[in-house]
Length: 156
Image (cartoon, rainbow, N blue to C red; front, side, top):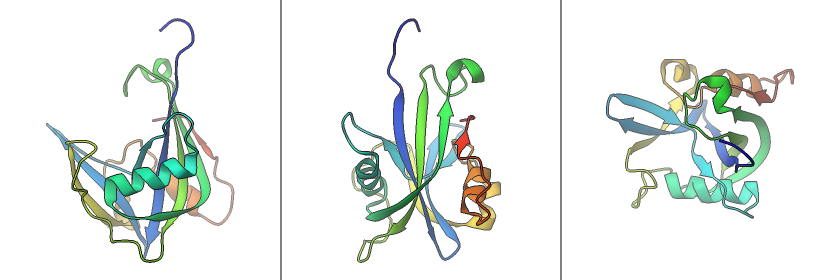
């Protein structure tokens, strides 16, 4: 694309409970993959507020946002347009379930018709799943206590 263009800004929640992570499952024809709960921020919407809204829409759960873990960027030209033709940036936050929150479950109104499940997945089983973007190593590094993880992931 020529000239200035918008960049998609999204937020994702890394919700950990009892050594399990909250994930949303999607089944497209010939493809099953998982995402962290979250999605696009609206114009003028603060990132933390967007995250709380998107987690509620996708899982019915209420979360409290803790801290930024890492940022993922996608520049289409660098990755041969594998995940679309527009630039994306995704902010990934550590979150916790809010006191009194309903348990995560499939919403009555789906944001995406291909969403098929909301589930808690053991952290040690994450490598066996297709998580998009491919951030399993970034999640594990960001959760490590040594503080040496690079907070920028340049691969969607």
